[in-house]
Length: 149
Image (cartoon, rainbow, N blue to C red; front, side, top):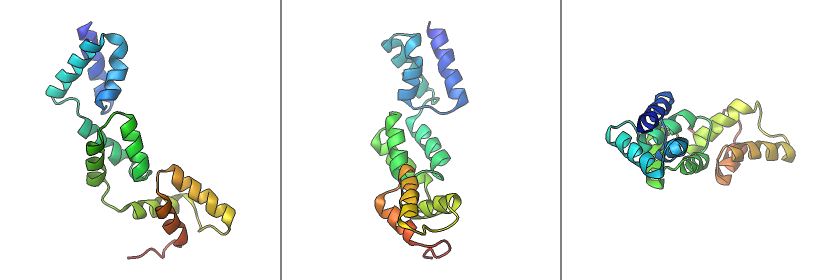
């Protein structure tokens, strides 16, 4: 049983980084809780499993499309602790939240909102991407090309 547990863990980690909680959930059906925990501890000792590395990879992959609050909630949902989430976002998001929101808005919408209905639609889009109300208001107030230097 331990061999198949180890093989399955390595197969999962070969495909992409996983958080400890994600991998524990995936391996849960292959052994007892103690066996899974022991295997995860072994993988951490070998340097094959790291929540910090997972958080960094996740933020690098998703930062161009999502705001900080969405990244934080997704990482927390995957079992990464708040301190590592903060470090991953700080290390892997060189541009400001406002700049990322402007870039995402520019790619999605050709023009600034012309009326209240369009403003609300664009605001909902940005909100779904995890940007704060303050950032959304600033982005939708700006016109493409008029961003502050």
